[in-house]
Amino acid sequence: QGIAWQLELAGYGQSSPVIDDQLIYVTSVSGGMKEQLHVQAIDRASGRELWRHLARNSSPEKNTNYVSRAAPTPVCDDRGVIAFFEGGNVVALSKDGKLRWQTKNGASWTRSYPGARSSCTFDQGKLYHMNAHGRLVCLDAQTGREVWAVDILERFEGKNIIWGISESVAILGDMVFATPCGAKGLVVALNKHTGDTVWATPPLEEEQPSYASPILLTLDGRTLLVNSATQNAFAVDTG
Image 1 (spheres, one colour):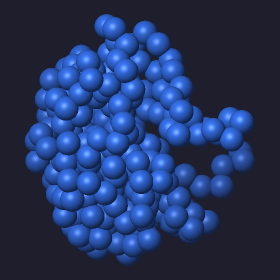
Image 2 (cartoon, rainbow, N blue to C red):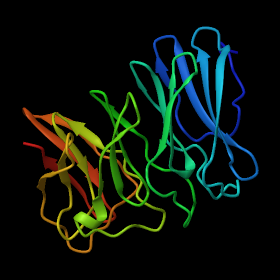
Image 3 (spheres, helix red, strand yellow):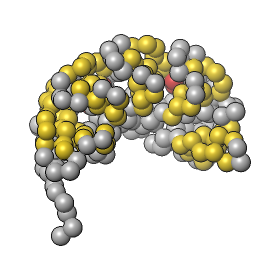
Image 4 (cartoon, one colour):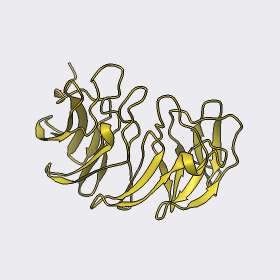
């Protein structure tokens, strides 16, 4: 009662659905080794499946309750949908389900709780994504070409955490933000066009990244970046 429609997914998905006008996109994985990566497009009004795309996992891992399974939420651009999957696979599809391009963001995460973590961020024709090893990449959303990439942990002398970096980055103006919690910066801003460092806040002693992503909010005319780490929550004036 009260349910307009329901649809069975192609596999098991931990991501959130995204809506683009009359389309709903969902992602999932299936197979004993998570070898099948699914994107489905659903008619928003009727719940009818419009198309389904199948991609192959480049780094299969045993499919259990102790691995991530299509955890990153996909993102829409003006041409369709882009999804990040296990194995480091990034898949871009048109609104009618045709493959636009596919690529990878570095190595897959095969340590504790293998699989994918953070979601992609789309901004002004570019796609930004941080993998579980702390590799932050900027891709051209039209072609999938890598524009720049930075090892956030290496540059700012941070340390990875037991289940891998899980931060989905935030963007404001010409800056993309990350939280390496390193000796050379707790929170950092990079130029979103080049990957160069714009600023870095002082470190907090013995602090490490958590499995959180930042949010931006405006308070008394100031735009603040708010996030948390293993021991502290903090707000940074993006000024």
